[in-house]
Image 1 (tube, rainbow, N blue to C red):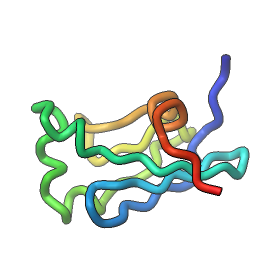
Image 2: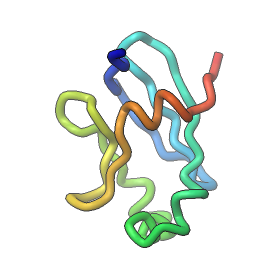
Image 3: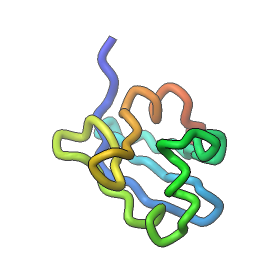
Length: 82
């Protein structure tokens, strides 16, 4: 199965991302459960969290070279927004 690519991402308060995919669907993804993992703990810093970007090609969102979340994870576990 292929997953839609990420078109845009916006960080909103309380560690939630709004992700728009290239099929025009939007999903809300709460990263709070990930913050317990060492790799994601720097995202407790709101300034860093809000600096999220779409990686080239739309395969992930990323904050730096070591913190990213794939389009598969965001699509599969995000909550659909109508």
